[in-house]
Image (cartoon, rainbow, N blue to C red):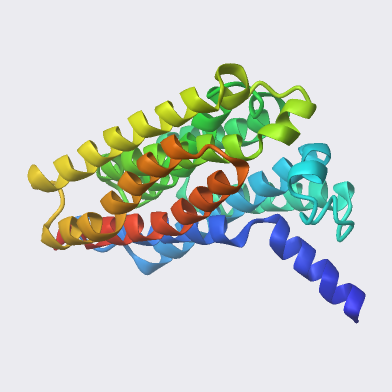
Length: 283
């Protein structure tokens, strides 16, 4: 019984439930920013498809990264021995297949293109691009941002997904670079060419600062230009902008692995306040 519990826990951890939840929330938020609330069925389908693709990508990422994870994250399911690489690969296939199967009733040319791009990005990222300076980070940010574009396409108004896509893309890109700064020892040992390894921690901190300023400008501009309403401005002003400013100050003072880990965790949770702000954007 204890072994079964450990196995289930390993599967659950493997798919990174917080990332899956973030994808589900993006589908719900996109529904709220539509001119009219989409049918409940479409919302549920969007949630399931995004969740399945996210889980598949996370499972495959751990399948490919088991050696690096043994150094950087030894408690992850594969290096800790909770599950095998074969099990992770099977889970990847199951989730990808489920996502595509459920998407069939919604299929259009636009949705087909989005899901094809997402599938290619998720696979090539883990196989080839993760260790490439900045490209891998941008792929992750693109995949997460596509959740809004996909949901908006399912709901029939893809244009409404562009603004949240931009915010999610930049927020995720910032966090991914900080995560690379945190993982520099393990990545360096395995010959990865991430941005911090290729250009150094200080330049990586400067890039994080530039992207954070850019995100602040865009987030504030969406409020000032009337794209999103008063409640959006309040939430962004109280929870998102201060955290980004703190990140800029902290990352330039201290590029240690410990501090980068703290900032990465802070941004991981703060993005949900950003999602809340978008959800309230119509008010």
